[in-house]
Image 1: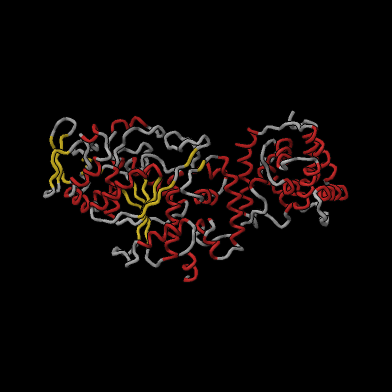
Image 2: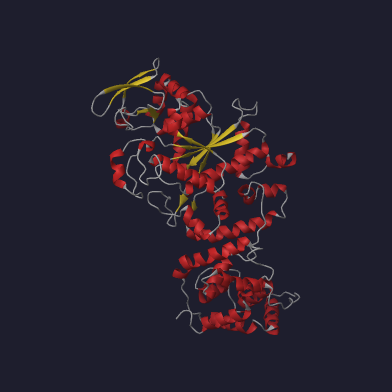
Length: 548
């Protein structure tokens, strides 16, 4: 462990860089509370979404990295802001009319439109917990309602009353003039209606720990700030929560970044050191627009997991968290194949390279072996040319290509085969567009047809390519199962037919034979699909049967 720790202390992998920042907080001694606290926040006005997954996953990666470099115990809290008032009736719930009379009430005071829980907030909290449990996250769940009502916020709230003016100064600087006139950091819960009130304070009494205000009807009320009678506005709540819990680390999206100085200042005013924070870039849809829960653009967790395993999503989340990334269906195949490339690389890497490998952080150091002997991209093309509707048809090709493979011995490949058929039918098939080859492309494809299965002709074209390049290289062994040999044939034909750049030749093969502008390594495709089958495919393409 000590050797691993030494390597981790210099690792440039971002979870270790963040973990070292957290550790530096306690370079003079361990925390008085006895642990380092990581936190993620959740707004339960809607169902958990892909951003929730990314935030908890990335925080967990940093937490696990911290546990490699330190013996200080850790905790992860998932905090639900379920005391927020319901500002509008969600459009995606049943029995919407049930909710209309409960606007501005805390979510935990709003009836559950699904009829399964005590409140709408409780329903969404249950969905969050089920969501997190499905992915095996280790966390403690905190409800803001319970936190306020149980008195766990009381000490900090009383301190906020004492230092009300200081906190207000911080907040008022960030507000427009008209908002300043009515703003208060405290939001009282109306004793009769139960609604969250956005009203100015007439008096804040630090001695009694109370606030006095007029409700919308002009009636004056005085309430203690403790015991769940009052909640904090969301920006002060951020800093107060950090102070109340002693949070050491929290990450949030770039849209929060301008508020970070506010959160930090309020935490300091309330007597605690602000946590380390990590601001991540937001995800974009296929048009480059920010993904939004309300607009439903981009891709959801359920949609991703319809076409690929969880690990591929974790891999995507790991990559460059401070860089904005398009998150749409077309990124899935690449994420799957790169994840398995990293799994295969891990087995041969030294300790430093392993700690920099995403799969180390995805699997918390217990990295499995990849049994994907065929890439996901290849499976997609195989599904395309074979018209496979069931994964067993793909296995017919896979077994010929890799006789030792089986669904039992290669479970991730078996799962990927099912995903590939689903993905092909939903995304690839509707957009395929075959074209006819031009004369140059046709001549090259005709020669490829002749060379496939004819060893002498194949070696001749390879020798011709070597001679044109001025290379005196030994000719390869004829092996129709070897994708490198097959690739060398395709490569040589492209060269001898004058394709420059050579990728134009491969692009022609993809567009004419596969109906797409991109595709797999063509030699590997031939080895998997079969010589006879590939020749038939090329002949159909040349005869216009695919583009017709």
